[in-house]
Each structure stands twice: as C-alpha cells, then as structure tokens.
Image (cartoon, rainbow, N blue to C red):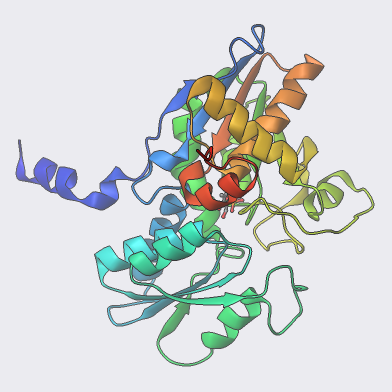
Length: 322
Ligand SMILES: Cc1ncc(COP(=O)(O)O)c(C=O)c1O
C-alpha cells in the first residue's frame, strides 16, 4: 500500500459518506420498488456528518476560521453532533445552541464529544430573542467565534450535491420515479434536487413534513395551521435561506403517531432501526405507494432510532414488566 493510500485509509473523516441502500417493504408493496439510504452509517451517526465536515473545511479554505476559533451552531442535534465530532478531530472548541424538544440521547452525545451545550425553549417564534437560533447568532457577535449557520450556509447544500446525490444516483436513483426526504434546513432537498435535475432525472421530489410545520403551506401554497410536533430534525416555523420554492413536487403531512408507528413497523418487519424523521419518510413512502403512481421510490433516512430510544420507549414501546 502506498503512503498516500494508507493516510487516506487512516483518516477517520474519510469514513463519511458511501452509505448503504437497502430494499424495504417488499411484501407490503410487491409491485413497488422502495429503497432507503441509511445515513446512520456515517461515523457520527447521521446525514449531518457530511454537512458538518463541508461547512468546516469550506470555512477553513476560505480563511473564515483558523486554529483557536470556536465553532458555534444552532441545531436540533444532529448537525451539532457532526460539528462536535469533526471539531474534536480537528481541535476546535464547539458550542451548540439547541432546544428542549431534542432527545436526551442527542444531548448526551453532544456533551460526549466535548461540546458546550445551551438548551433553549422549543417552538418559540423565529423573531423571539430567546429562540435558539437568535441566541446562537448573538453569542457569535464577539470573540473568535464562527457561526456555521446551516440554514443559510450553501456548503450545507453543496455537501449533498457533491456526495449524497451522486451516491444515490448510482445506487438506483438514476431511474427513480420519486425521491422522498424530510426538510429541516433544506440542505438534503436542495442538494439532491439540484443534482438530479441537472442529470435530467424525471424523479418527483416528495417531502415528508410534520403536521404543524410551515413547509406544506410554503411548497403547496396552502393555508398554514401551526402546532408543535415531536418528530426531530424536520419541519420548521420559518423558511431557511438556502431553500427555493420550485423544487418540490408534493408534500405529505405526517403526524407524530404515524412516524412512531412506521418506526415500530419497520423494526418489527425488517429488523431495521430508524429514527423518527425516517419514520415520517416511510409513512410518506407508504402513502405514495398506495397511489400506484410511482414504481420506484427512494427514501433518505437521516439517522437511526437509537438516538430517540427514550422517546420511542415512552411511546408505548416500554419493556414488559415481570
Ligand atoms: C433527524 C433529521 N432528519 C432530517 C433532517 C433534515 O435534513 P436537512 O437539514 O438537510 O433538511 C435533519 C436535520 O437536522 C435531522 O436531524
């Protein structure tokens, strides 16, 4: 093995990406090919490892940060875990602003990787001073602090355009009729749709959106009825700067119960451990398959259920008492 090959093999960051795709629900929908890309196979456990690495390396390359800087992010957990992990590897201090809807497993992981964590109240209006995003921005107004800002940072979209999308294309996406993802910051949706459109794909981009989120009304121009939801990582009460309206072909509104039930169903029938946003995506895939309009559906699973174990258990999934 050449030295350069060995160096590549030894760099933990090279383990990000090239995540597997598997078939699911083959007996439930024998006439529809449904596949899912498992982003929990990234070393930090979620799709956000890709985003964290790209935001940090792009900031380094453009001279926005250098050794000694503190990386700051507002996140529902996964982006923060990715930044904390990459930050630890690269030697940056990391400070994360999150909210109290986030699972205790994700909070524990953030601290485990050495991040300083501030927990704000969830579901505050986007213009509230106490909203976790505004707290993060304020915190960065002094010192050598860099706000990664996944909601406005094009490196987020680019991480998916340059890596997640070409992988998906080669793993069956080339002739997909529909691609289903959730939308938090919108990075996954924007990066994948840009790549697939440029390649001439006719795949429809379908969003799984929690009931109460603003995205259904934004993409489908419908009246918005706001409420709060438990599914982490997807849905929003504001429109991030990196999102454009014209890329979405359909939105399924998914309830918390539907997402929880889909996680349970997939675990029981396929022995596959999926997180709650993946549950919402599976639920949308079932609704789409039932219409018979898509023969090949590809889903993006952002993370696994392990990091929501306490929520999954308190949702009627607890141990049997003896
Ligand atoms: C669990 C989970 N699912 C889905 C998403 C949405 O991904 P994106 O921010 O690319 O829209 C996120 C984002 O944080 C997430 O944490």
